[in-house]
Image (cartoon, rainbow, N blue to C red; front, side):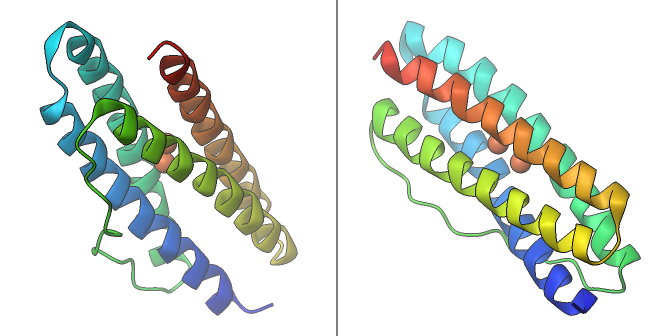
Length: 139
Ligand SMILES: [Fe+2]
Ligand SMILES: [Fe+2]
């Protein structure tokens, strides 16, 4: 396994993180009413986690000799809070799978620290998914 495949995978994750950061920022601005006030705080907190992920991935891609993407993955912009959260849940679960699979690539490449960090990021995204699921149950 060459680092090329790993770098490509990490760049897909990075594009997803930039997109998620923008999506939560966009959604926070569209969350209105009493319900929206609480959601704004949640979106803001999750956006901070995604920025941390994007920063880490950017550093790692450079360290591996790659060129980190600065292009966010595009995202849908549904009208209602419920549809927004359903989209977020779907995207968070996608990210869990992606980090889990790239952690395996990192392990195969003998990059033990990267493997662990990617697994931690998968756990962060699983935590986001759990929080979104909890909110969705109450809507
Ligand atoms: Fe993330
Ligand atoms: Fe997330």
